[in-house]
View 1: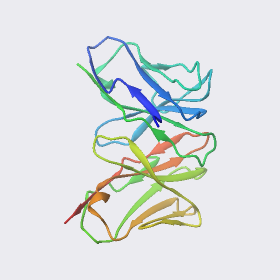
View 2 (view 1 turned 45 degrees about the vertical axis):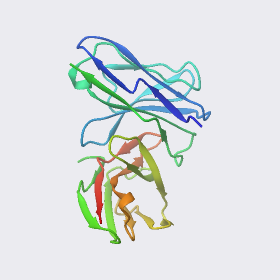
View 3 (view 1 turned 180 degrees about the vertical axis):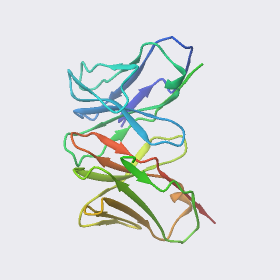
View 4 (view 1 turned 90 degrees about the horizontal axis):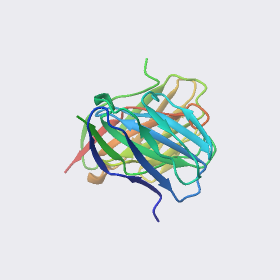
Amino acid sequence: NAGVTQTPKFRILKIGQSMTLQCTQDMNHNYMYWYRQDPGMGLKLIYYSVGAGITDKGEVPNGYNVSRSTTEDFPLRLELAAPSQTSVYFCASSYPGFDQPQHFGDGTRLSIL
Amino acid sequence: RKEVEQDPGPFNVPEGATVAFNCTYSNSASQSFFWYRQDCRKEPKLLMSVYSSGNEDGRFTAQLNRASQYISLLIRDSKLSDSATYLCVVNKGSNDMRFGAGTRLTVKP
């Protein structure tokens, strides 16, 4: 009963380093999303995907890249880490349809020093 | 103006109290609405969807007023376990969700 799985759970990066946050779901959801949540703030959409091979920018895409080669996986890449990218990152998935709720992974806490 | 606005609280209420949260949204074309709850340092979890006719799930009642672009959540008979942050979520379309910053609730014995 895995749902949405994110790895790693915690990471500390140095400025300028790169890394990939992994996200996989086993619910056969077409739609997947990446959000970031800064302290005391709501979630902000970084990128989303409506199916394998299709990705779109969200509200705050700068500094990030994504790919969607399979239905299950939706990795998020940081190419040149900056302190402003210190945040908690959540991956989510859902069925198609505007009335479908999203199911979230338990997050990746990323600090950039 | 923020796309989704919520009173940040905190709301501190005794057990058994009734508490109401409000949320306003700016995009009149928004298509669907949800309340999520988020415990400290955890992921958001769906509490309930919000329908135009209003809907109830046990102690929780959600209302939507499209004309006023306003959503509410009422919690009756508050429990200690209701302590969390409640997020108002609006779907602008194409699954482009906008989250409010959340309203924090603490229920005290």
